[in-house]
Image (cartoon, rainbow, N blue to C red):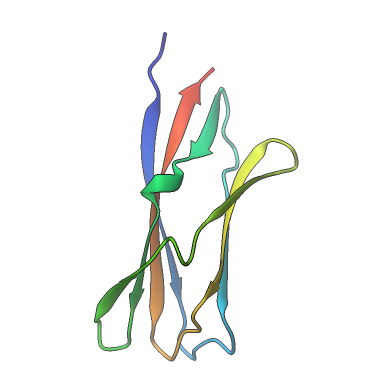
Length: 102
């Protein structure tokens, strides 16, 4: 029996001009062959960095990822309603995925 693997990912959302409204982030696990993948919901961390480089961690209770399945087999997460970004600001979202080899 092959053990579960955990892979960590980081998604960075940046803007040079700012966003006009709230921010929505989607990510889908694709091209997973000979295995199944699932998001570790408790691993999500969202950090907002302002234009001066100051980082602030946002509450994943308030900005909770919604996990679903796309096309019936591709795990997907969505985090919606993140505060708009001003010029030079960014979000960094880190999370883990459990990989179960088939």
